[in-house]
Amino acid sequence: MSRSNKTLLMLALVAAVCFMAAPAMADRLADAIAEAQPQGEPGYLGIPGGPQLNIIIGLVWAVWVGWIFSTVGAFGGIMAGVGHITIYGLGDYAKSFKKTMKLNKVVTDSIRVSNQWLVGCSAALSSFNYYKAGRLVLPLGIALAIGSVAGSWLVPWLTAGKISLKAYLGYFGLFVLFLGCYLLYETTPKGQANKKAAKKAAEAFQKSVKEQQAGGNVDMAEMGVKVQKFTPTACEFSFFGVEFSFNPLIPVVGGFFIAAMASFLGVGGGFLLVPFLTSVAGLPMYLVAGTSALAVLIGMVNSIASYMLLKQTPVEWGLIGAELIGIVIGSLIGPKTSKFIPDKVLKYIFIVLAAYVGIRYTTKGFLGYSVVPPF
Image (cartoon, rainbow, N blue to C red; front, side, top):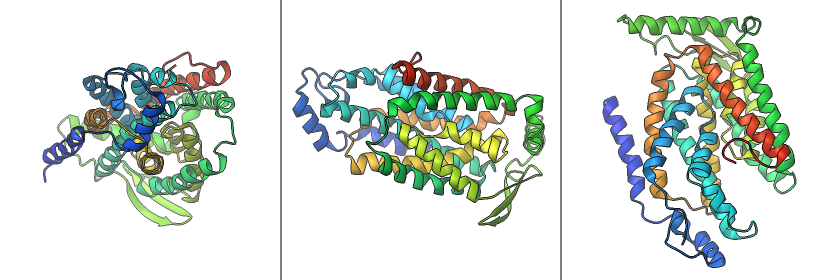
C-alpha cells in the first residue's frame, strides 16, 4: 500500500468517528442532566442549553495541536486544553454548575478525555512516522513507557484525595520555568560543551538534509537510529554515525516519576520528557519528539481507558472526529517540517512554550487564577 493510500485510509477511519450519533456512556450523562435540569436547545454532549460548537474551528485548531506535539514532542495536551477550555468556552460552562453537581464533573472529565484523544492520536502517528524515518530510539521509548504505566496507575491510586493540587501547582509552575531556563542555558556555548555527541549528530543530520534538498541521493532512514547493543543495564545505538549509550533502568525510573506528575496534573507529560531526553539521555532534538511521543502514547491509552471504561466519561464524537482529522494532518506535517528546523530553534520553541506553561501554573497556584489562557 502506498503512503498516500495509507494516509487516505487513516483519514477515512478517523472521519468515520464523526458519524457516531450519540455521545458515549449516556447513563452517567443522563443522571447528571436529570440532577441539574438545564434548559434550552441541546448543545455540547446533547445537554440542554449547552454550548453550540463549530467543528471547523476544532479541526483547524487541532492541526496546530498535532503539528506542535509532533514537532517538539510536548505541549499537545496543553494546547488541546486551550482549545476546549478557552476557545470553545467549555471551562466556563463547566464552572456555571456548582462543584457538587454531577454535570460539573461530567463536563470537566469530558474536556480532559477529549484532550487526551487528540494527544493520543498525535502520539501514535508521530511514533510511527519517526520510527520509519529512523528518528525514534525504540529501547529508550519502551523503557520510559514501562515506567509510565506504573506511574500513571499507581500514584493516582495512592494519592487520590490526599494531596491539595492547588497548593502544589505554584511550585510545579516554578519547576517548569526552571526547566525552560535550563534548556535555555543548554543552548549557550558553555551548555553545549557537555553535549558534544548531540551537537555532532545534529550537525550531521542537518548536513544530510541540505544534501537531499540539493538533489543528492541521501537515504535518511538508513542513516537513522541503529541499535547495536541492548541489555537490561546497557543500550548502545548510533544516529548519523554518532554513538550514544544509556542505562535502561534510568528512563524506567524517570518515566515513573514523569508519568506520576503528569497524571497528577492531568496532562500528557511531554514537556517533562523533553528535558529528560535532552539533558539526562543527551539526545539531539531530532530524536526527542518521536521518542517522547511513544512514551506519551502509552500513558494516553491508559488514561483514556480509565476515563471512558471505568468512569464512564462521555465525549462529543462529532467534535472529536473533526479534531482527529486535524490532528492527523498536523501530525503528518510535523515530522516532515521539523527536519528543516535547526536543533537550537527546536529548543527555543520548547523554551517559549515552557515559559507559557510555567507562568500559567505558577500564577494559578499562588494567585488562584492564571494570567494566561486558559484562565
